Amino acid sequence: MTFVVTENCIKCKYMDCVEVCPVDCFHEGPNMLVIDPDECIDCTLCEPECPAEAIFSEEELPDGQQDFLKLNGELAKQWPVITEKKDAPDDAKEWDGRPGKLAHLER
Ligand code: SF4
Ligand code: F3S
Image 1 (cartoon, protein in one colour):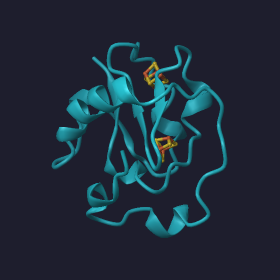
Image 2 (cartoon, protein in one colour):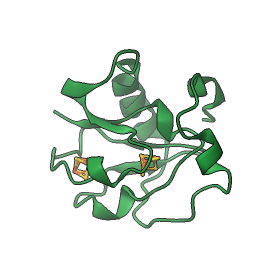
Image 3 (cartoon, helix red, strand yellow):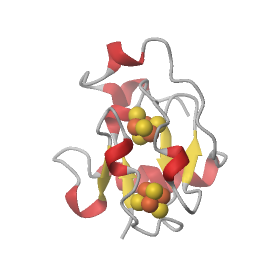
């Protein structure tokens, strides 16, 4: 099993999740993070840390978010590991909860 970063991370990218992961699973793209499903040990620590509530166990993915399981695996192979929290984008709050953010994903 793995945890999965879902759509609401896009353009919010708060990065509170990064520092709690004991096995450095998070990979950073231009405006989103993803979890490497091959490294995640299901410790559950990151899930409550995300202010945007964007992290779910793969077994509890909300409707419409199932594709993010595959996407996390794909993008984790392309993006570098991140282990230290940086500042969130200035307009993160404005994007929190907006629908249709997948269209804004930058690879
Ligand atoms: Fe890392 Fe644990 Fe979150 Fe998996 S569940 S990404 S191991 S913090
Ligand atoms: Fe994204 Fe939440 Fe982490 S918004 S960067 S999954 S804290």
